[in-house]
Image (tube, rainbow, N blue to C red; front, top):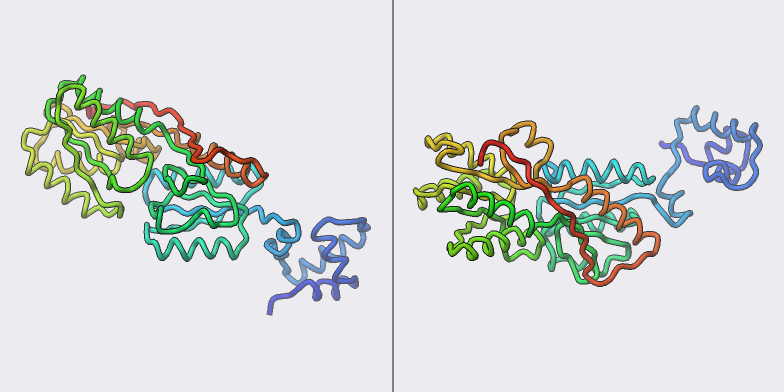
Length: 327
């Protein structure tokens, strides 16, 4: 049976109130009494209930994170940076992998509310199915539109799509295809595709776009790539909406004898450290992941501390291009 505060008080020879004052650093406590309480805690292997203590202070110093998966390099690196920044700001995180499952996300949302987190950062795709506006603590979304009242942090997706499309054209590509996620989702990432369409149309080229399901499953990506190569023998340029898709394209292209970049040029998107280590030759649009993490945490803490933002406030951070040898 776990020891409780009364057990600590009995062993230390003080009242439970005195133990509580020591734990919460309230009022005058002599050094002798403080040492007795700490010694009793050590002997009993007693650990204070941080949640209960935080509720007394009306702040848990916990932030909830709900993301589709940690296995994707972009989300993994983003979460790593968010956790690091939260730690420097005095907050701990509760991480939830929703796998884009609405029921799982709903369960995690209820769990975070039960644990009285101070706020949450959301990067999932289930907008419209869960009413985040009714959550009683602050919410910040990353690259997602959850509601008109929830602020959003994202990279400049339109700029990224424009850079990628123009670079492929400047490199001599005549038949370019863009692979993206489902466009019916309300997300700033759709601006990558909008930019691609605009650039192609400005050059008198009909944009060719293939949409992948938002399930992060490799088999569906491979099937789509096979279909593209079968249906477009003359393809000479591909703009992929993330680096994992670009990596799969390169693998399949090598497998069918396509030469990179001589007869097929490929540009990815994200520019995570992991992909840059594994595929240093990939040309990709680099998202400012650390800045996105910093801005989302800063914005959430502002909300926690009472600052209000305009409706549908969106913070957009510039992207850059990391040139490799695939273009």
